Amino acid sequence: MLPVYSVDDFLSATHMDAVDALRALFILAACTILSVSLPSSFSSRFVNYGARATSTSSEPKVKPTRQPHAFIRFLDYVSSFRVPHSYFTQFYVASVLSSITWATQLVTLGPAFWAVAIRVDERHVQKSMSLNQVMLCWALLMIQGSRRLYESLAFSKPSSSQMWFVHWLLGIVFYIAVGVAIWIEGTGSLASEKMALLHFRITNPPSLRTFLCLPLFLFASGLQHDCHQHLFSLKKYSLPTHPLFRRVVCPHYTAECVIYLSLALLAAPRGEFINKTLLCCAMFVAVNLGVTAATTKRWYMRKFGEEAVRGRWMMIPGVF
Image (cartoon, rainbow, N blue to C red; front, side, top):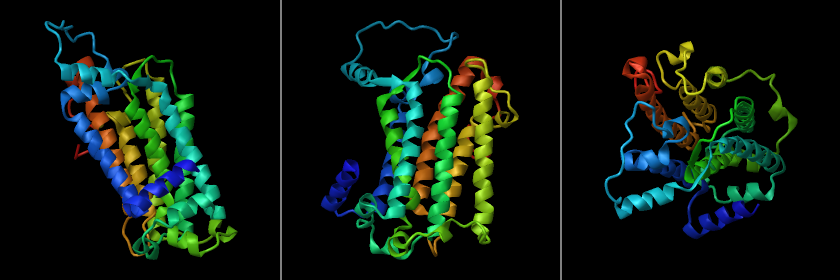
């Protein structure tokens, strides 16, 4: 519970609303990724990982002709703090544990729940998600985290690739934060109504929003699983041939964006079109994966030739 109370002390000292602070966290993280990815001297050191961090056999080896500048040496030193790429599995462990922890806190209205709830401004309390929405969205996030954990274990291959430790740390923070974001705009209902078995009933007719967005979530999840299974079946560092990859370089990233967007729509508080906290979360996902998708396409072009990926969108068909 110590991290929760540390966050509570921070919010108290800064007089920040918990919902606004969570939104700001996602936006700040997205801006940080953009600022690091734009300069080539940064992206090559801090953004690229796995196969994208390796040079292809066709790239000429350039020997340094002079001692690098002090700033370049500093960047090299900072980028040397790396962790194994297999640590990606810890993201989904964090996601599942976060979901389990908050489930117990929401059902019992435990101290961690109140540590966050008392920092939610009245304007967010008045426009609250229903308990049914909270339970549905929590369950979907739990399904997403559990599926990704299974895939990271079942579809893993031995690899010596690494990633920058900040990338790993940011991923852990993100998945812990999403565990809070999925319910925080339902604080009003959670604090005023006692959760009962009727909130878990599925016999009630779904709203139009649920009728449209729940299948969207499930469809995107299925597509993403299919993509991950295909990537696992490929020979190491080969070009994907699945139909989903024929027009988009990273359709599994597209599916990820749709998953979080559908959650943002499903979790819209009363009187709102969309859950703005989860929308900020979806924006972070889009920026983070968009940067990686662009890097992936450039790597494919270097390794397999420009013609191999000509006409393919990076992540969002018709847009990017």
